[in-house]
Length: 227
Image 1: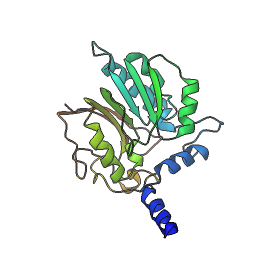
Image 2: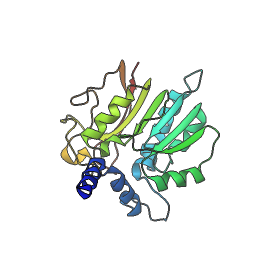
Image 3: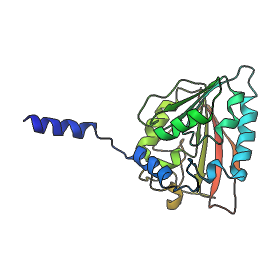
Image 4: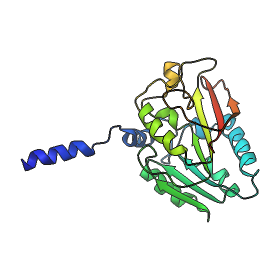
């Protein structure tokens, strides 16, 4: 009986999705590119056509406030982008699911108002803050995980969401398995305001749209005012 009880407990605590393992594998096997021993978060974090306009838009937004915001970067990756934004915030909390990546970031990037945390944003409680940044993160996750995250985003006043989506009209929010590509392969992309997520916001505004010959689809950054 004891053996069966232990087996049952093991099954209960098993995670319903393999996101952490998938993301660790991405970096270990250099699936997003990079040919050095360091971590590399792909073109979305390094291509000048994608990165520079994003930094400009976020800098303009963050510096528009008299009192600097507390920003939570949910899925900070190798921090090639986030490092340019820290100076415009009261506090910058950078989160990623890959522990070795977070430990590397802690050693490489040091600012008084900068903090790194290793969290699974679909499972763990999120840090408190004024603004959440999600830059090409949700596109990798299953609908169940996205739904869990959307419920937590209601605690932020502002959300900046960047997603890689098809050009033109498409059916949003098709299901995918976490870590196995993004919805673009199904001619789909995320729309948090549409079912099944139905994210409730006071304001929505597209801030940036980037098209390049180096990739299919369009990378869109959308601003949401939540409350």
